[in-house]
Length: 252
Image 1 (tube, rainbow, N blue to C red):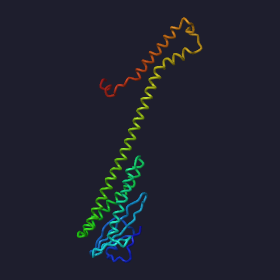
Image 2 (image 1 turned 45 degrees about the vertical axis):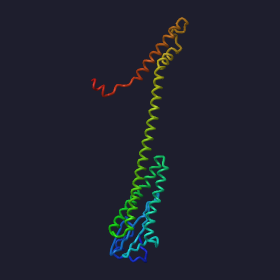
Image 3 (image 1 turned 135 degrees about the horizontal axis):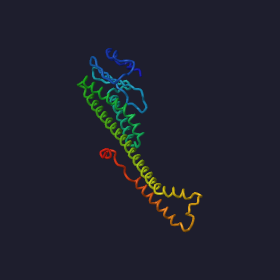
Image 4 (image 1 turned 120 degrees about the vertical axis):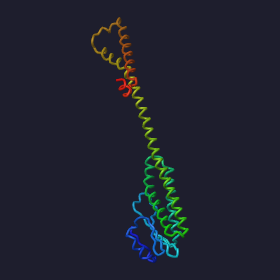
C-alpha cells in the first residue's frame, strides 16, 4: 500500500523524507517537536496485506489522523478496533470444538499477535519520544493490555489444539486396543475348533475308514474329544503371554 500524507499536513520535511512508498513496519518518528506514528489496522481473516494509518502530533501537541479529523479520538478508536477484533477471536475460541477450528483460530491469531506486539512497541517508543504526553501513556498501557490479551488467547488456543489432538489420539488408541482384543478372542475361538475342523475334514472324505459302522461310534467321540483337547491346548499356548526380550537375554 502506498503511503501518502494528507496535503494539508505541515509535517517537517525531515520526517517526510523518512517515509517510503509503502507503509513498512509500525514505527514512531520525531523531529522539531513533531511526532509521527505509522500504525497498522488489525488484520482480518485471510488478509495478506497491511493497511496503514498515520497519526501526527504537531509541535503544539495537537493530534491529527490520516483517516479522520479527530486526531486523538481517532487514535483511541484505532486501539478500540483491536479490542473488538480480539472479542471476535475470543468468541471463536469459545466455540471451537475440533482441531480444524483451533488451527483456523491460530492462523488468524498469528498476524494479530505480531501486529499488537508491534503496536505496543511503537506506542512505547512514542511515549519515550514525548514523555510529557499523558495521553500516550494511557494509550501505551491499553496497547500493553491488548498484547497480553492476545498472548493469553494464543496460548489458550494452542492448549486447546494440543488437547484435542491428544484426546483424539487417545480415543484412537482405545479403539485399536478394542479391535486387538476382539481379534485375539477370535484367534482363540479358531484355535479351539481348528483341530476338530481338521479332523472332520479328514474323516469326512469319501473313503472307507471303518468308522461308518455303529460299533465304532466310540471312536467318533474319542476323535472329537481328542480334537477339543488339542484345541484347548493350542488356545492356551496362544493366550500365554510372551517372555519379554530382556528377561530372555538375561537368562541366556
